Every structure is written in structure tokens, then in C-alpha cells.
Image (cartoon, rainbow, N blue to C red; front, side, top):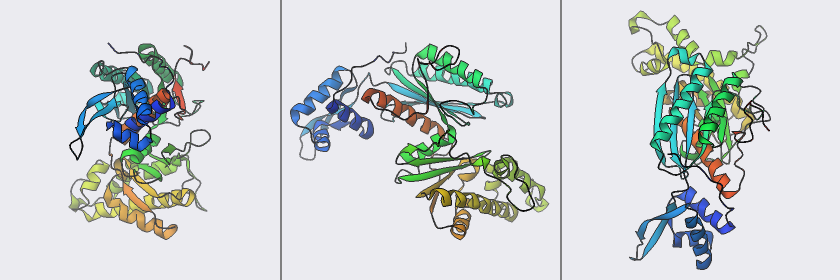
Length: 401
């Protein structure tokens, strides 16, 4: 049976500091804690004892030092619990359970059939099922403390830009009734950007942007570990940029996303595909795989790299980041980098460009990170900065009370 996350007494400052270090650094010894936090032995003993009494910290065995001395190692305890992150995409649902220290416990992936991809209601039903599967594997791992669901939508406190709002609220209400834990919503590209910052290509950079180029396009912006969401949650919605922009053509709504998306990329390549190169590619993955044997495929990719480079140059000119991470089914291909770098340098200035280190997992791992930050923030009495949280403050009819 799933344990409930009871309300715990507010921790003392010293206990909070110890818990935060264990969450961020993993199991450590008392001497290591004392050295890092500059606590006296009595203060350290009191802080560890306080956390042990609440089940948030526990002994993880004995560690021997270089001089043969041994010390007890402390890590998260049985009441620290776990969180769940979900990527609610248009083609699959990914779910990952993790401890508050980021250690993955269980993950599952479910592909959606064609009927499901056309209905948010069907996808939301699959999210409920995915949560049930994960929890069935984690019932003895302490309380569930938070769930984050990543969506391919603009997420804001008002939910004004979310499609099928009623079915979404119905799903959130069902999950909350079943598990009584806060449920966070976040944009999928924002989640991917956060994951790259914490454990991917951007982990050594303080200011990075994540550009997703796949079926759709999007931009996530992370500054010092925090997402920049904008006033209405729409920061990074680059699909709304005017395109084309010329004296003879009128911009089309989300025309840039259509043009750069993988569907139209493949259509352009197939329309002129030479018979000598065999059957034309059906997918972006197949196109990139053919680059070594087909000059025409390589030419298509080079032209697309130029187009992506123009978009990157625009983003760099506005944001001036340390690093641009390319992700998505198209963007994650390293063959694009040189062409993108060349165009960016021509149009603005050089910038470091890398491909995602977390292909296909960035969004769900970012959702996990947000859930961890929220759960730890709750234990420490700190604001996690979550933009949308469904909790006891919502009424049954979907109104925030």
C-alpha cells in the first residue's frame, strides 16, 4: 500500500542544511558534513539526530578513510520518499520514479497508437495508467511526494493556453483523489532544458538554451538552474515567430514550425529524391542514416542545417547564452553542428553549440527534477518556483480556491 506523505515539523536551520547537502551530494559521512557546513560536533549530532527521528536520513553503512579510520555514512532515509515525472507526448508516455537524490527507481514507456495521438483525453487516460504502473513498483519506498507532468503546451497559472482544459482538470482531480500529492504541470521543452542543465550537455554552464527541432520546435531557457518562463509562460514559443518575413510574402501562423519540422523536411527531400539513391526516406532518422551513402541526403541535411542556423542566430542575438543545446528527433544529430555554427557566426557571433546528451529522455528527466525540487522545497520550507500546482486548493469543479 502506498504510504502517505504526512506533514512534518519545520526543520531547524542546521537540519535543513544537512538534508540539502545529502540530497545534492548523495551519502556522506559526518566529518564530510562538518567540514562542508562548518558545524560543531554537537550541532552536527543534533541535526543528524533530528533528521533520523523523522526518517528523512538514515545510516547507509560505514566508510573507511585513507588512514584506516571509519565513519558512518548518511543518506536519505525511508521517509524521504520518491517522486514521479512523466513526459506526456503526442506519440508516447514516459514515466520515471526517482528518489529525492535523483536516483532512478523505476521507469516505463508506452507508445500511443494513431487514435490516441489525436485526443488529449486519450493521452491523459494513458497518464493515469502510467502512474498506476509506477506506483505498483514503488509501494515500499516511502511516501510519494510529488508528480510532474510535462506537456507540449504553454503552461501558466491561469491555464489560458492549454487545450482540452476540462479533460486535463479531470485527470488531475482523479490523480489527486487517488494519491493526495501535489501535481505539477510544465512545458515539455522547458523540462528538457532543465534536464540538460542538471545532467546533460549544459551541466557546466550557468546560462544555456535548449532548442528542440523535431516534429515541432521549441526553446527552453535556463539561467543558474532556474527556468525562464516569461510573463504568461510563453517564453521560448519560437513557433510563433513571423515566417516567412519578406517584401513579397505574408507570415503564416506557426509557419516556422511547419517549415523546420521533420514532416516538411522529409517532404522536401522526397520531392526531389534521385532514383539512383534507392527509395526515398520515410523518416528523419532514416534521412540522417542515409547521409553517408547519398549525396542528395547530405545536401538536404546541409540545407536544413543552414535553416536551423538562422533560427539559432536569432535566439543567440536576443538571449546571448553561453551554450545552445540542440535536441529533438532532428536537432540531436551531430552532423548538423558545423553547418549551424557557420551560419550563426556569419549572422551574429560565435557561440558554443552541442547536441543533447539525453536523447529521448531529457523531457521526462526534467519533469523528475522539477518534482524533486518541489518535494525538497516542501521539506525545507522553501518555494520551489513551480508555475502550476494542482493540490488541495483546487475544488472538484476545477476552480482554484
